[in-house]
Amino acid sequence: MRIAVVGSYGAGLTMRTPRMPDPGETLGGGVFASGPGGKGSNQAIGAARLGADVSLLTAIGPDAFGDEARDLWCAEGVDARSVVTARAATMVGVILVEGDGENRIVIAPGALDELRPEHVEGFAGRIAEADLMMTCNEIPAATVSAALRTAHRVGTPALLNPAPARDLSDADAALVGYLTPNLGEARLLTGLGEEAGPERLLDALRVRFPSAATVLTCGAEGAWADDGRTRTRVPAVRPTCVADTTGAGDAFNAALAAAVCAGFALDAAVQRAVAAGAFAVSRHEALPGLGRPADIDALIG
Image (cartoon, rainbow, N blue to C red; front, side):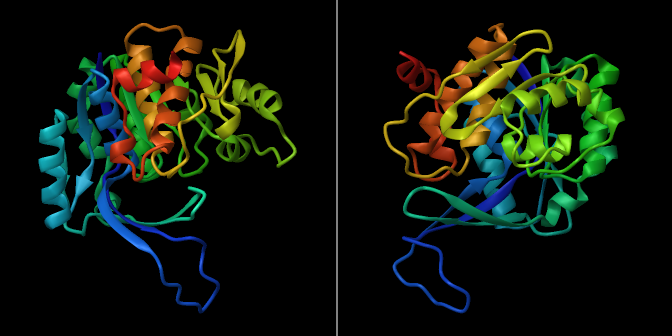
């Protein structure tokens, strides 16, 4: 299982709080933690923990957060030789987590704004060697486009996790092999309103992404797998508890990618991804929520 990831890295500064403060209010009683994050890095580490051989392209700053990132990737077995050291500071995400596990996130992109299409071109060899290329929307749109075009040129299927929600051109949409939106992202990509349910969204996504197998995530309602011909609803897996939803989508995408590369059928791959997401929400912060094969097998069993 060889996976190339073109994505983001950032330091996550997490504050757990019983509730969100009102405007102008200073709220005590918070619990603070800091740690590594960013969708690209999380997905790379998640896939590596599930047995994939992972190469990562992202950008970090010339600072302590960047140094910590390189140490982390070395420890997790992620090939980070292509990672760019930019002039700007490493991306920072400030995460507020309420008592029920729901989160709100604000991001300062920093170094990620300097991750450019020419860096993707330098990473083309790794993409060509991979069984799957993954990318996400936490990096500049031009860099996502370059990643999709490069993967298409070298014959490697591309998985796009369209988060945070952002539209893309029809030309780029035609290059996507696997699409993994949530309901909100699917509505933005299709232009449909809040009343549109999963089946209607998937019909529209088939038209918008003609070459893609779509996996639509629906939170506590599980997910849908649609390969363009058949459509399957995959039920949710009940987590042992809900501690923190941060990173659940990254765990889901990492497990989906690893399972697809291992030869699982799409619906079976989605079942493993749903279980990975359930494991993730039972842990505080993103990195501890990136499970290993035994963690996923236990939830499926």
